[in-house]
Amino acid sequence: MTASDDDLVAAAELAQKNAYAPYSRFRVGAALCVGERVFVGCNVENASYGATICAERGAIMAMVVAGQAAPDKIAIFTDGDEPAMPCGLCRQVLIEHNLKMVVLTATPSSRRSMKLSDLVPEPFVLKR
Ligand code: THU
Image (tube, rainbow, N blue to C red):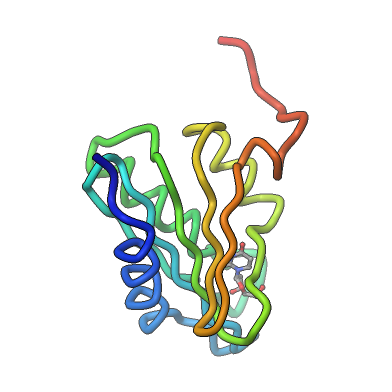
């Protein structure tokens, strides 16, 4: 069993409330699930702009530090009408942990569901 889409979007919306985005004022919440376990992140900006951490990567860090792996699904919640797509850096981090994961993007008024593998058709992977 995995967390439902509704539960994951609700968790991402809750996480968005803690976003620290004084520079862009673009607040992002993310929630991913490993089975029924949910891990959340929000964007945390920094005066040294490059040190900003996106919401998706925050959720991945929370998952890894909890000793979990291979997320099934991630929900990303932003304001506005059009859902925001994960940035290139986050896509690269997400594929590291499961290229087959589902990506849900949501706003208060819309929702989209897609496969990470469609967002990253030719992923960079390092053979180990
Ligand atoms: N941001 C995310 O949290 N996730 C993304 O995939 C794209 C961008 C954040 C970073 C920054 O705090 C703000 O959105 C504007 O770029």
